[in-house]
Image (cartoon, rainbow, N blue to C red):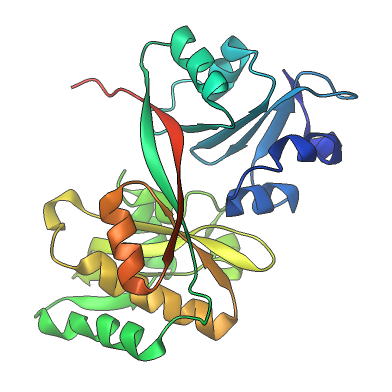
Length: 256
């Protein structure tokens, strides 16, 4: 497949059925790379944004698509049809289907009091702090697999501080949970929520997400929450997001 970054206008119609802020980031020239089968009359295209790979058009070029993805164990492949999904699965038996969920912000906006009360729950935990991601925590986030997605789509801290932001719960120098900007475009941001596996089920994600959404309100940004599973969807709905639809994605089976 060929690099399509100089012919975005020609591959754009192939992705008209997608609902994802990462698409906005790519077509705004902020994040990702694009590929297609033909620069003049593309029929198949792939957009790569962080760990997400969007495949659209005529189901073809499975080998090329998987070569572009490489050995990324965190890859999430989002095909635009069941036929495309089956093509990829048949080519690589490590792939399997997962159900993910699109959400959308509430029509009348988020309830500020609800978010403020949720963020203030940090006061129930002795010795823990709710902090904004600064240069120090930017570097610490990169040091752990579970937290690197908070900042990994930015070139450096200067890029992150200019276009992104995030809130984390810390215990001294250790990050326990956080919500941050996964990507951005001119009107909004993609929300990334993650918690250290050893500190889940404590309500930390809801605390940091509330602080993050309050910052979005302050900056007049549209937050986009793509829920990986029903637990993530439940947290989003507690924040005020509304379920939009579910969709099929592909992930790689992990070796135990």
